[in-house]
Amino acid sequence: MRVSDDRYTRDRQRLDLALRLIRLEARTFTIRQWTGLSDDRIRKLYRSYCLTGNAKIVLRHRGKSPRQAAFFFRNSELNFQAAQLTSLFVIYGLLRGTSKRVESGYRIGSLDSGSLLCQTYEAYCELHAPIKISFEHAWFLLTALARHDELGIGRCEDCGGVRLADLLAKRKISCGNCRPLLVLSPSAALAC
Ligand SMILES: [Zn+2]
Image 1 (cartoon, rainbow, N blue to C red):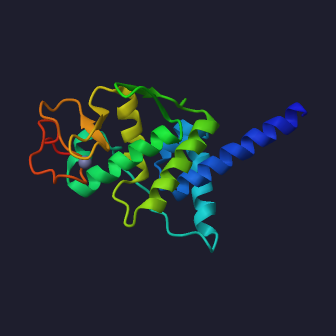
Image 2 (image 1 turned 180 degrees about the horizontal axis):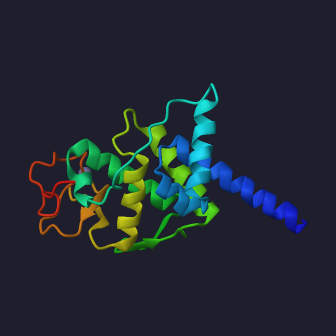
Image 3 (image 1 turned 45 degrees about the horizontal axis):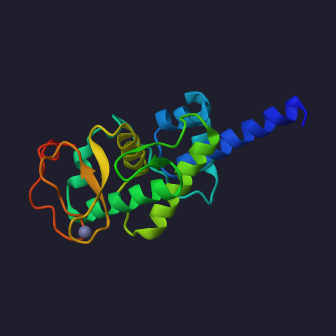
């Protein structure tokens, strides 16, 4: 393949990924992280996407991105969906490792990892209606699990299923499917 063809293909892939992220309501900052496109180019892309008649209404999220792991322990349904999304991250290879500890299986800025993240989130959306976790919260969940300082993967003591583990909590919590989250862990008590 000639160099110019190769560049064209890469650019096309970058734009396709950016459009996919816009559809999933990702923030401009996140789109820039994954595609390397400038804010200006993302804004133009966003405008042209919204001008096409068949585009669904896309919300633009402003302000700070999600930063609190406690969000995923707010209630049982949210916790259950977060555990399912976590499993999908493992299945799609965005997280890898042993049952004791997982680590990142993605590379920020890689178009392949970016598409995999979209694919995983789209699979999550197909499983749940209504969805409780936005794309930005899903991206935060993935980074928090990869950091392994606040969140980890555990096993529910009641059903043996995958549960999201609050690494800062002293008490083990059952999965959102088995037991309602009546008592919030210390880290979960913080506002999101
Ligand atoms: Zn359970």
